[in-house]
Length: 462
Ligand SMILES: *[C@@H]1O[C@H](CO)[C@@H](O)[C@H](O)[C@H]1NC(C)=O
Image 1 (cartoon, helix red, strand yellow):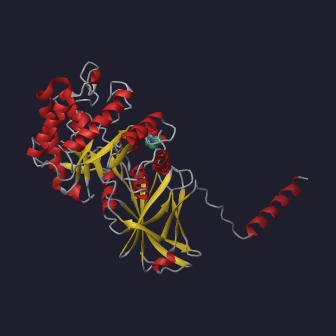
Image 2 (cartoon, rainbow, N blue to C red; image 1 turned 45 degrees about the horizontal axis):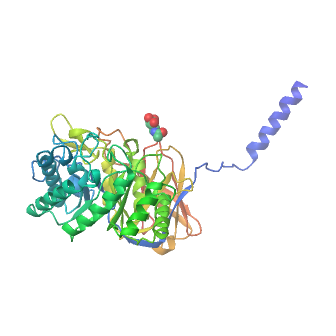
Image 3 (cartoon, rainbow, N blue to C red; image 1 turned 60 degrees about the horizontal axis):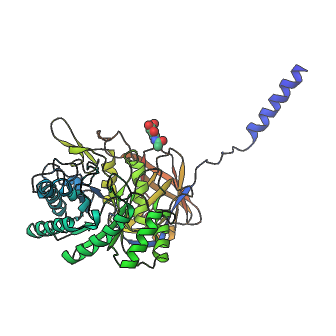
């Protein structure tokens, strides 16, 4: 009996080894797509921006961080107002507590203009409502009185004009008013302020763009703050030139859904389409190569200008380009792992092509078409999982619909905010076989923060 059993097993084993080899299908969490046949406009580095991030230098442009750290990433916008400086702001002590904040703002403005960026000026910072204020400090519109705010805004106007700050200027009406941290009064008082401030800024700064509402929570048709804001803005025609909100943290839905909701709000309240800024994006744990690529892909798909949120406290808020560089003990600046991703993104100078995120909305891609070929950045939103990138429309580039195509692959590592992860790793030339005009690239991140770049040349060779 025993013998027979052994023989049976041996025979069975022969049978399987004789069978043709079978390869288990690759298990993935889904696929993002790139459609090379659909162009979506020139790349403009919409996400290469940040809030604060420049070392203050009196009232002058910063000279500490070498220019190439800015120019390589194609930096083009900053947002600041002197938060977390030694001055408390107008609301806590009038002009004397304001002037230091204005000087920091002017220095940051000049740093921004040195690289031809747009500068979004934060009124709530100059007022001093950046988290450190007391509930007893004056808030605009207290007791229905705007006298102090109007005096404040006239001072801002005088200082802006005397210092030649109108070029590239955008004025932000108030930051994150839904949070007690920034607005220590009722929602009704905020709405009243919003309308008053918008009308006054329009009058005093007739050529300057206004942005708002800069809510902490991304647009949603279900959020009452968004509904009441949209209604009052429509009723009073206090419409910002640039709509804005924040996309921060894994608890928020991504722009694929929040932008769709925002458009529903615009339709419901009969508001016009205008440019959108996500003037703070990513929480501190989301600031890593993979998740930044995820955000950049979302920004680019929806034509949103994006500014990295800045999680530095005190002096660190006013430094490090919002956690893209760090300083060693000798005062020398170095890039961290994320900076290399933004440099690569800054080199994606061609035309953008249409993309879609994976169905689970945790993996996304950004792609451009340029003279030599295609560049693709790919990254997950904080997950370590396998995905594919399905690249369609190969014929649009004259690449074979069926056949072998070599793809240059690069990996972007992350060693934390205060460490140089080194140049992107050249993973080599991976040969893929195109089928019916489609190429399926595989992404297997070794960590939950790794990003990848893929390059396809027009000759299909690396
Ligand atoms: C990503 O991985 C790191 C290191 O293993 C871990 O500390 C972190 O919690 C992970 N992040 C998420 C969002 O799971």
